[in-house]
Image 1 (cartoon, rainbow, N blue to C red):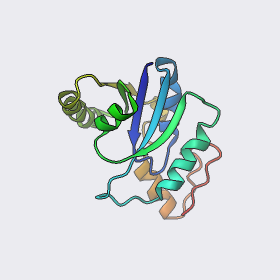
Image 2 (cartoon, one colour):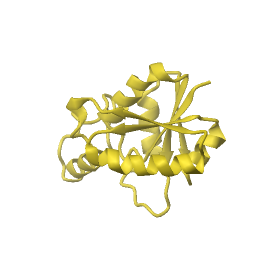
Image 3 (cartoon, rainbow, N blue to C red):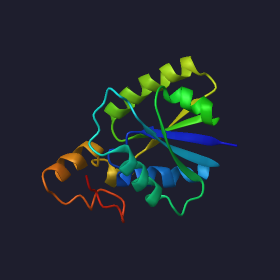
Image 4 (cartoon, one colour):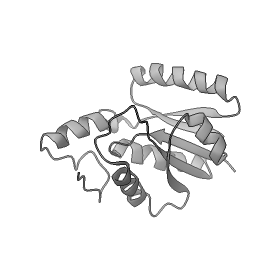
Amino acid sequence: MKRAVFPGSFDPVTLGHEALVKRALPLFDEIIIAIGNNSQKNYFFPSSFRKQWIEEVFRDFPKVKVMEYEGLTVDFCKKVEAGYILRGLRTSADFEFERGIGQVNKILTPEVETVFMLTSPELTPITSSIIRDVFRNGGDVSNFIPKGIKLTL
């Protein structure tokens, strides 16, 4: 089985996340959207909300599973028997950052491949950070998050 892990904080899930997973579905038998929980980070939205929102977005996609994890992504990949890590690239800065992580992951766990996909051009400016800032300041984020998701705290 070709299983991929799409890791991230998804704080919150964006149209870019949704589009990337949908575009990757033909490549894999299963995609696990893996919500990373790092005790060193302060998340804006609770993990239970983030998980619920992602499950709602992909409820009609049986090949998509949503799980939470802590620790190294490659260790999680071994645990769930995933041979691939799926990552989206918006900019060249993303590439430089993700390349380093991907190379370290390859050294740590040679059997897991990192697969990069380019973000759709129209979604390139959308980031979870920008969405949080707009939301925090009372702005309308509906153009940046998947339909049916209502951000709350």
